[in-house]
Length: 389
Image (cartoon, rainbow, N blue to C red; front, side, top):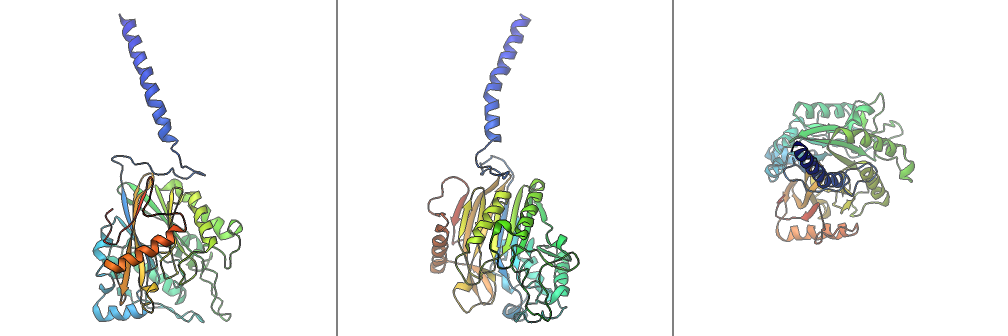
């Protein structure tokens, strides 16, 4: 009798193994993993999720600074603060340093420096991380960059892409929410530009000099041979095992153009192949298309967000990107049209929203992304009435 019972138990375990093991390996070897990257997202019931809100260029100086002085420090974010604060993590590109020190970088021509109290606009609207890897970070030289980093830190906002030396500038910011770790890196392709031969101060950080992290060499020709690109890819590969998700911010491209350059697309693909989940682009001061590439999402430019460039419709419109992550990557995403009125962004409605949505859809179609036909996951939607994700 005992032998019969033992045989029945062993038979049951064997049959159970035949059922479970193939399922286990099917999950483990999900399609979509390329060059060590995460697999294409498959929904997991009950998995933790993190929401990210991302915007483009934030400039709190010049015309916006005058509006702040007249109407209060919360003026630029009054219409969007609640929306941004709802996300688990909020990110933007800080296009103006914050402080009172330093001296204008000779020869540059356009210098931004926002007053220290303007940081409260970022705090009030829930910003967690901002990139300082851009062509205005050192408008008032090293002193104001370091002052900006201190002010941000004192107010609980992480800065990425700049620091007192190159190691700090390339150092990731890691934020944990709902049990998931998100790693941020930021770079600028303007790092090697100099504005005066009398004072040949590059923006790039060195071992001894404060500055920003470089993305690609000036007048880059071959992405595959670029030394800065190799270092970026190394940073990404070092970060991937430490976090659940990787977000890279890139200050790149040509100003006032709706279309990214070919080298930008190649660079974005290489970064995603290395393990990046989301690329957030800025600098052109106009929105550009989005692309879904393997497990990653590329927003080539979210355009302006808080700015005073009201000289054209193109520079007064942008995008707010909402993304929901799970442990396996991007689950859902939506872009909402933004219009800027007197330095103040608002999520667009009506005809304005429809126009921006149409432009975004047409530009994204160039990369094979059809907002009307999105097979599989993630769902990427255009939403002019506010994100439903």
